[in-house]
Amino acid sequence: MDLLAAVDAVLTRSPELPAPSVRARLRKADGLTQQGVAELLGVRRLAVARWEGGKVEPRAPHRQAYIRLLAGLAIKHPHAAELSLDDHQE
Image: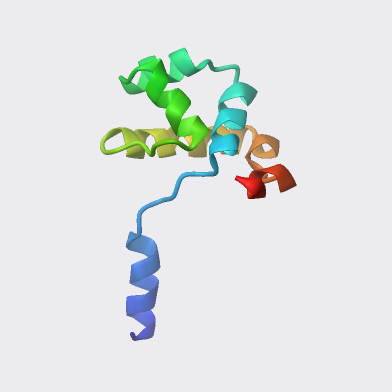
């Protein structure tokens, strides 16, 4: 793979979700409830609970919206986005 193709591969890959425990911390840091996130994204509260529990991953189109929400919350609350030792045990 040439240099430009390697760069293009990085730029076009899908953004990843943070660890499930970080997802919950970001939500809580902004004072959001699971129900509030669910209503915002047009899903049930149980879906958000499962995403935060690491039981399932959101599918399109909710995945992109959820990633964007979490990225915005990480900017607002950088302390909540940091991984702790407990996060690595998941």
